[in-house]
Amino acid sequence: MTGVRREWPGAVELEVATEDGRCRALAYPALVGRPETGDVVLLNTTALAMGLGTGGYAMVVAVPDRLPADPTGPGHLVKARYTPLQATVAGADEQESPYHEALRDADSVDGMPVVIADLHSALPAILCGLYSHAGDGDRPRVAYVMQDGGALPAWFSMSCAELRAREWLCGVITVGQAFGGDLEAVTLHTGLLAARHVLRADVAVVAQGPGNLGTGTRWGFSGVCAGEAVNAAAVLSGRPVAALRISEGDRRDRHLGVSHHSLTAYGRVALAPARVVLPQLPGELGDRVREQAAPLAARHELVTVPVDGLLDALKAAPVRLSTMGRGLEEDTAYFLASAAAGHHAADLLAQ
Image (tube, rainbow, N blue to C red; front, side, top):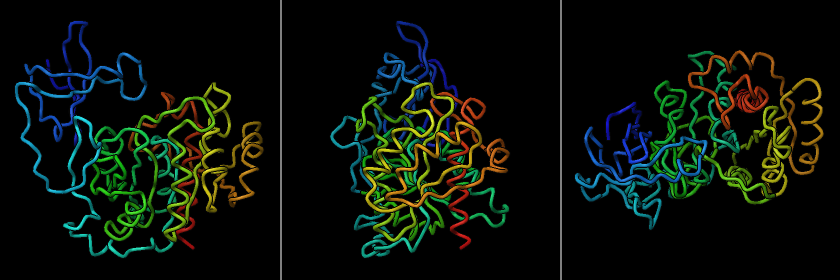
C-alpha cells in the first residue's frame, strides 16, 4: 500500500502498487483492520479483472502482517455467513438488543409510505423529490432499508455516508445478508419495523445496495427483490410506492422506457397492490412509458405525477447522481421517475 486516497464512514480507499502497476483498493477497517502506508495487503481483484462498473476496486481481504483482533460481538447475528469475511453484528431484533421488546410483537408500520426502487442510484433522487415538498424545518424522517441484492456492506456507498451526514436520512438499516448500517435486521420485515418503531421514520426507502446483478433474462436479475419489498410493505400495513426504472439513455432495448426489471418485479412478483408512480414525461418517451406500464394497472394503482420543479430539485442534490455511469443530463428520465416516486410519498404523508 502506497497511500490513502480518501475515506468515508466504514471504508478507506487506498492506492496500492502491484506487479501489474498501481490500482485503487477498498478496505473495510471493521473487517480487516486499518491498512497503513507501507503495509502489504492481500487483494481480491475480481472487479478489476472483470471490468465491473460499480466501484471498480480491488478489495482488501487482509493485512497479513497486522491482523485485526478476533471479533467478540457485541451481537449474535452473523452476516455474509460462511465466507472468510463473515461479520458478527448486533441485530435490532435479537434478544439482547435494547429494541427487542419494541420489535418482538411489532406487526405494523402504521401506514408508513414505503418507496421501493430497483437500483441503489434511485435513493438520492427519491429523497430530492420527497424533500422538494417541504421546507428544511418540516422534513419528514426518512430511513433507508438496504436489501442484499447488490453490495453487502453499506460502507461501500459514499452516497449513504453523505446523505446520513447531511441528515437527509435518519438512518440506514441493513437486512438479510447486508450489513454495516446504523441498525441491523434479520429480514426486510424486521428492517421496516425497525425503521418505524426504532428510528421513528415517517417514510422508508427500500432498494438493494450498489452493484445490482442482471443476466438479460426475464427472471435472472437481483431487482426481483423490489416486488418482494412491495409484499413486505403491504403485509405490515404500509403504503407501498413503486418507483419505476425508466431510462432514455440506456441503449439496451429491454431497459429503454420502462425496464423489464420493473415490469417483472411489479407485474409478476408483487402480489399486493402498490401505487406505481408514472412521471408525467413529455413526447414519445412519455407515450412509450404509459403504454409499457399500462398492464400493471391490473394489479396496482397507476398514479401520474407531474415533474414540474423536480429537475431543479435534482440539480440541487447533495450527492452526485449517477446510474450505470450516466449522470442527470445523460438519463434525466431515470432520475425524474425516482424523484416523482418520492414526491408522491410526500403527498401521502400530507393526506
